[in-house]
Length: 243
Image (cartoon, rainbow, N blue to C red; front, side, top):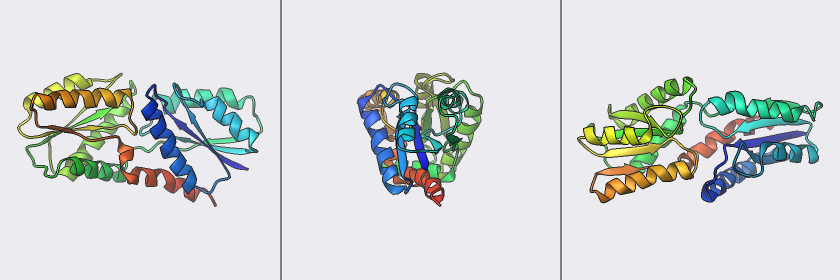
């Protein structure tokens, strides 16, 4: 029997965990696969081994792992495969496969542009956009964000698009936002490239609110899953796998 095991990152933020579970429950409700379970890599229960075991207990003979990650970095290339390899040793008869993360897709960039326009009615060439990534030591992340920055700039009609990171890569967020703010000749629009609320998004929002209080013309979009296109993008390949 087919099963899907969703794997999110996990967070210490109760709000972020609830958002992730709510998002995945909406996905589950739209996908006609008999067994679907939610799990997380770290920090949030149930963890991967718990979710995997639950699939097996419900009768799964074939499990498709669906990572709830934006880009392919260390978690996708190393952490999740290693966890699954260790777990699958106890279930040698279970057929196991894993889908790719979102990657850089035009529909995601379109959704981001919509979120920006929802936050800022008018965007001009003078305005600056700062994309804030989670960060990774994987060099492919920098190439991915270069494509993201280019795509966002094209959609919003501005060449002033910069990238910074919250961890594990440079420039870091505080440096990035200070540099952009110092050079800005128009509005500064901060775009967290994050799916859900959590401690990382809270850090970004707090800094933006502080700058607003200092009368800077600055704005910040919310998590990417605020746009329904992200849910649709996630669901589409799962519906295709139903047959």
